[in-house]
Length: 288
Image 1 (cartoon, helix red, strand yellow):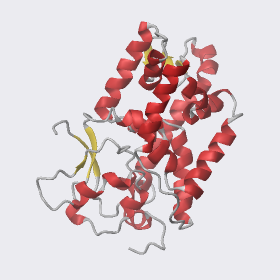
Image 2 (tube, rainbow, N blue to C red; image 1 turned 120 degrees about the vertical axis):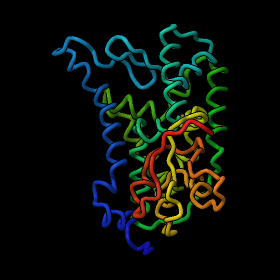
Image 3 (cartoon, rainbow, N blue to C red; image 1 turned 45 degrees about the horizontal axis):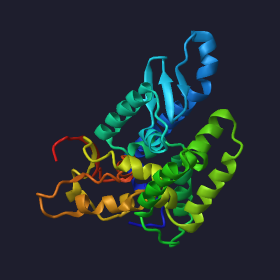
């Protein structure tokens, strides 16, 4: 493979631009729809006389009926000593079951607005052939996750949510950009100039929490045609969690599953997009 060419060039030539970006485009549509629902729901309510969505990513009510609560925020609240309403527990249960089934880190690639920033930094970094950077242990995010719970307990508040980049950017996009510009720039520069995928892949406690919900999911990326792999490395280059690909893709023993079972996989589908040999696909499978 000639890596002087942008990643995905061969896939575009073989499959066409839209097919070679199918899952990326669907993710952007998902993120846009979610943001739009929160932004435009108050305006639409004046015409249809019902709020499509009330609230934010932490806690919302859909069609005045369906409560949805971020279980990470709810857990912080409980640890801080604040007992939410039962509807919040119901909303957290619904969200938890959903992410248990499809994979917790699908939140990172299909919902979180920060993902757009980090994907852009990674894209530009690859285009400019920037290599190296500071090495950050991927387990750092779990230490930070524990720290957010410790802060909640010691301060009896949701202190982390006041500085959580996900919460800040989302609130700013919905209610006015304000402080979010600084957060967006800081995370972009961190991922672009300091370390590849530093925030989402190494530091974000939100992603760390949701990865814990991905242990029993049934939606997986499957290297079902791994024998057709030509070692171009494009899936590895594009993957935000590169460590999850190697074993399912390169295992020679047939008893080793071709499914990417790691809870760190974000199910973003970019490996499917950029593979010219169509090695990968999404696969629904519950059995371990």
